[in-house]
Image (cartoon, rainbow, N blue to C red; front, side, top):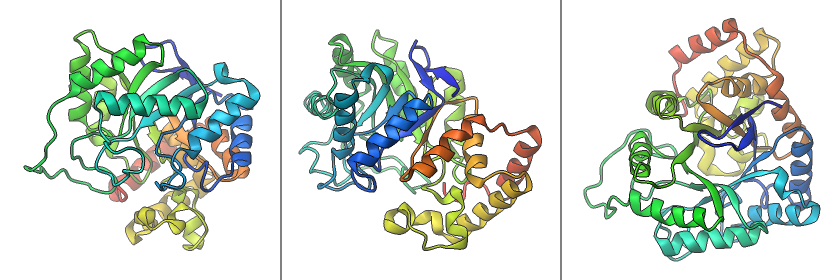
Length: 344
Protein backbone atom coordinates (compact mmCIF):
# COMPACT_ATOMS: atom_id res chain seq x y z
CA UNK A 1 0.00 0.00 0.00
CA UNK A 2 1.02 3.60 -0.56
CA UNK A 3 0.33 6.31 1.98
CA UNK A 4 -0.01 10.04 2.22
CA UNK A 5 -1.31 12.40 4.87
CA UNK A 6 -4.46 14.42 5.03
CA UNK A 7 -3.29 17.88 3.93
CA UNK A 8 -1.95 20.12 6.69
CA UNK A 9 -2.19 17.30 9.26
CA UNK A 10 -0.16 14.38 10.57
CA UNK A 11 -2.94 11.87 9.84
CA UNK A 12 -1.38 9.10 7.72
CA UNK A 13 -3.92 7.63 5.28
CA UNK A 14 -3.75 4.93 2.63
CA UNK A 15 -3.94 6.11 -0.97
CA UNK A 16 -6.81 3.65 -1.32
CA UNK A 17 -9.80 4.40 0.92
CA UNK A 18 -12.51 1.83 1.64
CA UNK A 19 -15.91 3.20 0.65
CA UNK A 20 -18.74 1.58 2.57
CA UNK A 21 -22.04 2.84 1.16
CA UNK A 22 -23.15 -0.65 0.05
CA UNK A 23 -23.01 -1.93 3.64
CA UNK A 24 -26.58 -2.43 4.83
CA UNK A 25 -28.13 -2.76 1.39
CA UNK A 26 -26.10 -4.71 -1.15
CA UNK A 27 -23.81 -6.10 1.55
CA UNK A 28 -24.80 -7.86 4.76
CA UNK A 29 -23.15 -7.17 8.10
CA UNK A 30 -21.05 -10.34 7.73
CA UNK A 31 -19.91 -9.29 4.26
CA UNK A 32 -19.13 -5.77 5.48
CA UNK A 33 -16.96 -7.19 8.26
CA UNK A 34 -15.15 -9.41 5.75
CA UNK A 35 -14.42 -6.40 3.54
CA UNK A 36 -13.06 -4.35 6.43
CA UNK A 37 -10.96 -7.29 7.69
CA UNK A 38 -9.41 -7.81 4.27
CA UNK A 39 -8.86 -4.13 3.54
CA UNK A 40 -6.99 -3.66 6.81
CA UNK A 41 -4.73 -6.65 6.10
CA UNK A 42 -3.84 -5.02 2.77
CA UNK A 43 -2.80 -1.78 4.44
CA UNK A 44 -6.01 0.15 3.79
CA UNK A 45 -6.34 2.18 6.99
CA UNK A 46 -8.81 4.81 5.73
CA UNK A 47 -12.56 4.07 5.83
CA UNK A 48 -15.26 6.47 4.60
CA UNK A 49 -18.95 6.41 5.47
CA UNK A 50 -21.90 8.78 6.03
CA UNK A 51 -24.95 9.05 8.24
CA UNK A 52 -27.27 8.73 5.20
CA UNK A 53 -25.79 5.38 4.07
CA UNK A 54 -26.66 2.74 2.88
CA UNK A 55 -27.15 3.88 -0.71
CA UNK A 56 -29.47 4.55 -2.39
CA UNK A 57 -30.97 6.58 0.47
CA UNK A 58 -33.92 4.91 2.17
CA UNK A 59 -35.53 5.21 5.59
CA UNK A 60 -35.24 1.46 6.13
CA UNK A 61 -31.46 1.32 5.65
CA UNK A 62 -30.32 4.77 6.77
CA UNK A 63 -27.63 4.43 9.43
CA UNK A 64 -27.01 0.73 8.75
CA UNK A 65 -23.56 1.36 7.29
CA UNK A 66 -22.33 3.18 10.38
CA UNK A 67 -23.88 0.46 12.54
CA UNK A 68 -21.97 -2.26 10.69
CA UNK A 69 -18.70 -0.37 11.10
CA UNK A 70 -19.50 0.13 14.77
CA UNK A 71 -20.15 -3.57 15.36
CA UNK A 72 -16.84 -4.33 13.59
CA UNK A 73 -14.99 -1.96 15.94
CA UNK A 74 -16.72 -3.52 18.94
CA UNK A 75 -15.77 -7.02 17.80
CA UNK A 76 -12.09 -6.53 16.96
CA UNK A 77 -11.06 -3.47 18.99
CA UNK A 78 -9.10 -2.01 16.08
CA UNK A 79 -10.48 1.52 16.17
CA UNK A 80 -7.00 2.95 16.64
CA UNK A 81 -5.80 1.28 13.40
CA UNK A 82 -8.37 3.08 11.25
CA UNK A 83 -8.64 6.68 10.09
CA UNK A 84 -12.42 7.04 10.10
CA UNK A 85 -14.35 9.54 8.02
CA UNK A 86 -18.09 10.14 8.08
CA UNK A 87 -20.45 12.82 6.81
CA UNK A 88 -23.43 14.85 7.97
CA UNK A 89 -26.31 15.03 5.50
CA UNK A 90 -27.13 18.37 3.96
CA UNK A 91 -30.60 19.83 3.33
CA UNK A 92 -33.25 19.72 0.63
CA UNK A 93 -32.62 16.17 -0.54
CA UNK A 94 -35.97 14.67 0.50
CA UNK A 95 -34.55 12.65 3.37
CA UNK A 96 -36.51 13.99 6.32
CA UNK A 97 -36.36 10.55 7.93
CA UNK A 98 -32.80 11.42 9.02
CA UNK A 99 -33.95 14.45 11.01
CA UNK A 100 -36.62 17.10 10.75
CA UNK A 101 -34.19 19.90 9.96
CA UNK A 102 -31.53 18.83 7.48
CA UNK A 103 -29.23 21.82 7.75
CA UNK A 104 -25.94 22.81 9.30
CA UNK A 105 -27.36 24.62 12.32
CA UNK A 106 -25.75 23.92 15.69
CA UNK A 107 -28.68 21.74 16.72
CA UNK A 108 -28.57 19.65 13.53
CA UNK A 109 -24.80 19.25 13.51
CA UNK A 110 -24.81 18.26 17.18
CA UNK A 111 -27.55 15.69 16.69
CA UNK A 112 -25.87 14.29 13.57
CA UNK A 113 -22.44 13.89 15.14
CA UNK A 114 -23.65 12.35 18.39
CA UNK A 115 -25.93 9.91 16.58
CA UNK A 116 -23.09 8.88 14.26
CA UNK A 117 -20.71 8.37 17.17
CA UNK A 118 -23.26 6.13 18.87
CA UNK A 119 -23.78 4.00 15.75
CA UNK A 120 -20.04 3.83 15.08
CA UNK A 121 -19.35 2.86 18.70
CA UNK A 122 -16.50 5.33 18.97
CA UNK A 123 -15.74 8.52 20.89
CA UNK A 124 -14.35 10.45 17.93
CA UNK A 125 -14.28 10.77 14.16
CA UNK A 126 -10.99 11.50 12.41
CA UNK A 127 -12.54 13.39 9.49
CA UNK A 128 -16.02 14.91 9.68
CA UNK A 129 -17.41 16.08 6.35
CA UNK A 130 -20.34 18.22 5.20
CA UNK A 131 -22.00 15.91 2.68
CA UNK A 132 -23.16 18.69 0.33
CA UNK A 133 -23.76 22.43 0.51
CA UNK A 134 -26.85 23.95 2.08
CA UNK A 135 -27.18 26.32 -0.86
CA UNK A 136 -28.41 25.22 -4.30
CA UNK A 137 -25.55 23.91 -6.45
CA UNK A 138 -25.06 21.79 -9.53
CA UNK A 139 -24.56 18.27 -8.15
CA UNK A 140 -25.56 14.74 -9.19
CA UNK A 141 -26.01 15.10 -12.93
CA UNK A 142 -26.77 18.85 -13.03
CA UNK A 143 -23.91 20.09 -15.18
CA UNK A 144 -24.52 23.84 -15.06
CA UNK A 145 -25.27 26.13 -12.15
CA UNK A 146 -28.57 28.02 -12.41
CA UNK A 147 -29.14 30.70 -9.79
CA UNK A 148 -32.39 30.57 -7.81
CA UNK A 149 -33.50 34.05 -6.72
CA UNK A 150 -36.00 32.53 -4.28
CA UNK A 151 -33.29 30.66 -2.38
CA UNK A 152 -33.46 31.30 1.38
CA UNK A 153 -29.86 30.37 2.16
CA UNK A 154 -27.63 33.06 3.65
CA UNK A 155 -23.86 33.10 4.08
CA UNK A 156 -23.17 31.05 7.21
CA UNK A 157 -19.67 29.66 6.51
CA UNK A 158 -18.19 31.17 9.65
CA UNK A 159 -21.12 30.05 11.81
CA UNK A 160 -20.71 26.44 10.66
CA UNK A 161 -16.99 26.51 11.41
CA UNK A 162 -17.65 27.84 14.92
CA UNK A 163 -19.87 24.81 15.63
CA UNK A 164 -17.31 22.39 14.21
CA UNK A 165 -14.60 24.13 16.23
CA UNK A 166 -16.55 23.25 19.36
CA UNK A 167 -16.52 19.57 18.37
CA UNK A 168 -12.76 19.71 17.75
CA UNK A 169 -12.13 21.26 21.16
CA UNK A 170 -14.31 18.57 22.77
CA UNK A 171 -12.19 15.88 21.10
CA UNK A 172 -15.14 14.47 19.14
CA UNK A 173 -13.64 15.20 15.71
CA UNK A 174 -10.04 15.69 14.62
CA UNK A 175 -10.28 17.24 11.16
CA UNK A 176 -13.02 18.54 8.87
CA UNK A 177 -13.77 18.31 5.18
CA UNK A 178 -16.30 18.96 2.44
CA UNK A 179 -18.17 16.82 -0.06
CA UNK A 180 -19.89 17.68 -3.35
CA UNK A 181 -18.58 21.21 -2.94
CA UNK A 182 -17.77 23.87 -5.52
CA UNK A 183 -14.84 26.31 -5.83
CA UNK A 184 -17.01 29.08 -4.39
CA UNK A 185 -17.94 27.15 -1.25
CA UNK A 186 -14.47 25.75 -0.79
CA UNK A 187 -12.82 29.15 -0.96
CA UNK A 188 -15.41 30.73 1.33
CA UNK A 189 -14.72 28.09 3.99
CA UNK A 190 -10.97 28.47 3.61
CA UNK A 191 -11.25 32.25 3.94
CA UNK A 192 -13.42 31.96 7.05
CA UNK A 193 -10.94 29.56 8.67
CA UNK A 194 -8.32 32.33 8.71
CA UNK A 195 -10.17 33.79 11.70
CA UNK A 196 -8.76 31.14 14.01
CA UNK A 197 -11.29 28.48 13.01
CA UNK A 198 -10.78 24.89 11.79
CA UNK A 199 -9.65 24.49 8.19
CA UNK A 200 -11.31 22.27 5.62
CA UNK A 201 -8.57 19.81 4.71
CA UNK A 202 -10.28 17.70 2.05
CA UNK A 203 -13.11 17.75 -0.44
CA UNK A 204 -14.86 14.53 -1.47
CA UNK A 205 -16.15 14.92 -5.04
CA UNK A 206 -16.86 12.60 -7.94
CA UNK A 207 -13.85 11.95 -10.18
CA UNK A 208 -13.35 9.27 -12.80
CA UNK A 209 -12.39 8.83 -16.45
CA UNK A 210 -15.97 9.56 -17.48
CA UNK A 211 -16.31 12.64 -15.29
CA UNK A 212 -13.19 14.77 -14.97
CA UNK A 213 -15.03 17.99 -14.19
CA UNK A 214 -12.94 18.31 -11.00
CA UNK A 215 -9.97 19.18 -13.19
CA UNK A 216 -11.91 22.05 -14.75
CA UNK A 217 -13.26 23.73 -11.64
CA UNK A 218 -11.48 22.42 -8.54
CA UNK A 219 -7.99 21.08 -9.30
CA UNK A 220 -6.44 24.54 -9.13
CA UNK A 221 -8.02 25.08 -5.71
CA UNK A 222 -6.58 21.76 -4.53
CA UNK A 223 -3.08 22.67 -5.70
CA UNK A 224 -2.94 26.30 -4.61
CA UNK A 225 -4.81 25.93 -1.32
CA UNK A 226 -3.51 22.45 -0.39
CA UNK A 227 -6.93 20.87 0.02
CA UNK A 228 -6.91 17.24 -1.05
CA UNK A 229 -9.44 15.43 -3.20
CA UNK A 230 -11.02 12.27 -1.85
CA UNK A 231 -12.19 10.89 -5.18
CA UNK A 232 -15.47 9.03 -5.04
CA UNK A 233 -17.13 6.92 -7.73
CA UNK A 234 -13.74 6.25 -9.40
CA UNK A 235 -15.34 3.44 -11.45
CA UNK A 236 -18.49 5.38 -12.34
CA UNK A 237 -20.77 3.10 -10.29
CA UNK A 238 -19.04 0.07 -11.77
CA UNK A 239 -19.33 1.11 -15.40
CA UNK A 240 -15.54 1.41 -15.67
CA UNK A 241 -15.17 -2.25 -14.78
CA UNK A 242 -16.47 -2.83 -18.30
CA UNK A 243 -19.15 -5.27 -17.19
CA UNK A 244 -21.99 -3.33 -18.83
CA UNK A 245 -20.33 -3.23 -22.26
CA UNK A 246 -21.19 -6.85 -23.10
CA UNK A 247 -24.25 -7.04 -20.87
CA UNK A 248 -26.14 -3.77 -20.31
CA UNK A 249 -28.40 -5.62 -17.87
CA UNK A 250 -25.57 -6.98 -15.71
CA UNK A 251 -26.39 -6.81 -12.02
CA UNK A 252 -25.03 -3.73 -10.30
CA UNK A 253 -26.03 -0.35 -8.92
CA UNK A 254 -26.61 1.09 -12.38
CA UNK A 255 -29.18 -1.55 -13.30
CA UNK A 256 -30.62 -2.01 -9.83
CA UNK A 257 -31.27 1.69 -9.22
CA UNK A 258 -32.61 3.96 -11.96
CA UNK A 259 -31.07 7.08 -10.42
CA UNK A 260 -27.60 5.95 -11.61
CA UNK A 261 -28.73 5.27 -15.18
CA UNK A 262 -26.76 8.19 -16.66
CA UNK A 263 -23.74 5.88 -16.89
CA UNK A 264 -25.64 3.72 -19.38
CA UNK A 265 -26.46 6.57 -21.76
CA UNK A 266 -25.14 5.85 -25.28
CA UNK A 267 -22.44 8.51 -25.33
CA UNK A 268 -21.15 7.35 -21.93
CA UNK A 269 -21.08 3.72 -23.05
CA UNK A 270 -19.22 4.79 -26.20
CA UNK A 271 -16.55 6.53 -24.12
CA UNK A 272 -16.30 3.52 -21.81
CA UNK A 273 -15.68 1.30 -24.83
CA UNK A 274 -12.82 3.55 -25.94
CA UNK A 275 -11.15 3.23 -22.55
CA UNK A 276 -11.70 -0.54 -22.61
CA UNK A 277 -9.90 -0.72 -25.96
CA UNK A 278 -7.08 1.33 -24.47
CA UNK A 279 -6.82 -1.00 -21.47
CA UNK A 280 -6.71 -4.00 -23.81
CA UNK A 281 -3.94 -2.36 -25.82
CA UNK A 282 -1.72 -2.24 -22.74
CA UNK A 283 -2.83 -5.60 -21.32
CA UNK A 284 -4.58 -4.01 -18.34
CA UNK A 285 -8.03 -4.56 -16.93
CA UNK A 286 -10.28 -1.56 -17.45
CA UNK A 287 -10.70 -1.44 -13.65
CA UNK A 288 -6.96 -1.09 -13.13
CA UNK A 289 -6.63 1.53 -15.87
CA UNK A 290 -9.43 3.61 -14.35
CA UNK A 291 -8.28 3.34 -10.74
CA UNK A 292 -4.57 3.79 -11.46
CA UNK A 293 -5.40 7.00 -13.32
CA UNK A 294 -7.03 8.36 -10.16
CA UNK A 295 -4.24 7.09 -7.89
CA UNK A 296 -1.60 8.99 -9.88
CA UNK A 297 -3.27 12.41 -9.89
CA UNK A 298 -1.22 14.85 -7.79
CA UNK A 299 -4.27 16.53 -6.26
CA UNK A 300 -5.81 13.23 -5.07
CA UNK A 301 -5.26 12.45 -1.40
CA UNK A 302 -7.11 9.14 -1.49
CA UNK A 303 -9.17 7.10 -3.94
CA UNK A 304 -12.45 5.86 -2.44
CA UNK A 305 -13.12 2.42 -3.83
CA UNK A 306 -16.30 0.41 -3.25
CA UNK A 307 -17.18 -3.21 -3.88
CA UNK A 308 -20.01 -5.67 -3.36
CA UNK A 309 -17.89 -8.81 -3.74
CA UNK A 310 -14.51 -9.81 -2.35
CA UNK A 311 -13.20 -10.38 -5.88
CA UNK A 312 -14.04 -6.77 -6.77
CA UNK A 313 -12.47 -5.51 -3.56
CA UNK A 314 -9.23 -7.41 -4.18
CA UNK A 315 -8.93 -6.14 -7.75
CA UNK A 316 -9.63 -2.58 -6.67
CA UNK A 317 -7.00 -2.62 -3.94
CA UNK A 318 -4.44 -4.20 -6.31
CA UNK A 319 -4.68 -1.11 -8.51
CA UNK A 320 -2.26 0.59 -6.14
CA UNK A 321 0.54 -1.46 -7.73
CA UNK A 322 -0.32 -0.38 -11.30
CA UNK A 323 1.78 2.42 -12.76
CA UNK A 324 0.53 4.14 -15.90
CA UNK A 325 3.34 5.21 -18.20
CA UNK A 326 3.51 8.54 -19.99
CA UNK A 327 2.44 6.74 -23.16
CA UNK A 328 -0.69 5.34 -21.53
CA UNK A 329 -1.53 8.69 -19.97
CA UNK A 330 -1.10 10.35 -23.36
CA UNK A 331 -3.53 7.87 -24.91
CA UNK A 332 -6.03 8.56 -22.13
CA UNK A 333 -5.82 12.27 -22.90
CA UNK A 334 -6.45 11.55 -26.56
CA UNK A 335 -9.73 9.82 -25.70
CA UNK A 336 -10.69 12.58 -23.28
CA UNK A 337 -10.01 15.24 -25.92
CA UNK A 338 -12.59 13.71 -28.23
CA UNK A 339 -15.04 12.57 -25.53
CA UNK A 340 -14.66 14.94 -22.57
CA UNK A 341 -16.67 14.29 -19.42
CA UNK A 342 -19.56 12.32 -20.93
CA UNK A 343 -20.98 11.61 -17.47
CA UNK A 344 -20.11 15.03 -16.05
